[in-house]
Length: 307
Ligand SMILES: [Fe+2]
Ligand SMILES: [Fe+2]
Image (cartoon, rainbow, N blue to C red; front, side, top):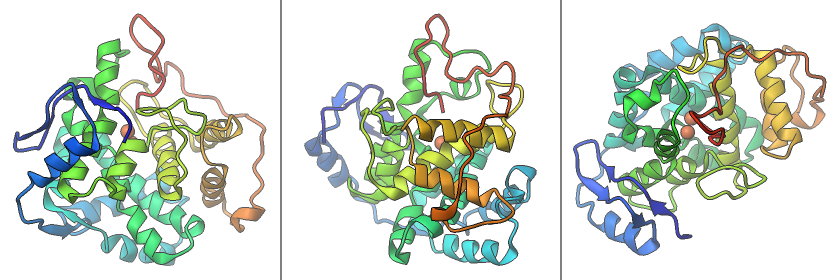
């Protein structure tokens, strides 16, 4: 592991400090933290927790996703697949906590999970890899549990300090998931750490290109869902066409995976073809929503990734 520094303390939801501020995220420190987890790991099915299953079904019926999940058989098959996802109870509790604390993030985690599961069927060859991989999607933003709610819900540009705290959700999430899964190589922890990376190295926290289909998949579904959903920092969301054009631009610039973008565009079309035959128009006709504060920051214009 490179010399990443945990800038802010990372605590469990019951207040136990796992990493103090200004600690190196070294293999040694991670091992020490994981060995301190003496609790018996009790797991539960994601869809069986609270109202998660009915909430997912409700979100997929909303206008922004209805066209993607229009086929009943596909939807049922996905629910069966998602039903198999199990995770430690504290992870389930943390995700469910967002339902009260930050409903946008709660909805986002559930829809990114469903969309990633759907696209993985076209992009990941073997079923075991799909099952291993999709489990990282619903917990990718779990580190936001360490971000003050007034920063998450802020309607005006973030200050540089607030931007740093928000960006730290990648590393907080990584630490929390390493601890709960007791494994630093766990896919859920890696998805949380790497879902804001970009292929040209312009992302964070490490500024590296990720070569892992499941993580690349969450990178794209994360951006897409953020664009088409309401957010505190803009009065209206992107329409689906404009959102797909924005992501196509990102693929053209070499920031995200073309294959995942093609799968997403294909799934938004009435007539679907195999990914290899999916032709993408490079024409841009959509109009981004007005007064969008995404990527802006108070005083300076340096916060490029605020999701
Ligand atoms: Fe994120
Ligand atoms: Fe996200």
